[in-house]
Image (tube, rainbow, N blue to C red; front, side, top):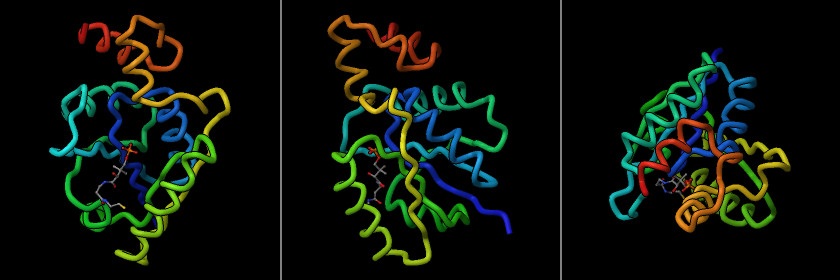
Length: 158
Ligand code: PNS
């Protein structure tokens, strides 16, 4: 039986840390869908189309990864895609509380869906989309923590 996994997130923008998690998930599951959340209640630096495009470009080298977007409840989307697993990355203990709560909420809503955590490489343990946006905004260098296509798009934001 083939197992499809959904890797959901805001990906605003996708970072090398996300790419690492997506690649590791793709080595375990038959199909991985990187799914960008379209959240009307949250303002984002990049549109959902741009976030999808950046993710597609940076993951084009992994054949069993596709990129999609979703809104509404994650578990509904997972059902709609006929997937069985939610992938989330863990960077530090500080991520754990939120992730644990989210996994339990999702299990309450859909007990048949499994949340699968993948631990990041220590070199990405401090990387987040929000810090990338902030550092870039104040003129710091983010070249080493995002793929080159994302870096180019960040420059266009200026
Ligand atoms: O990259 P993020 O912002 O940490 O990802 C959070 C995400 C998209 C996984 C989460 O906000 C989510 O699943 N949103 C969809 C709405 C939903 O299902 N909420 C209930 C989860 S407890």
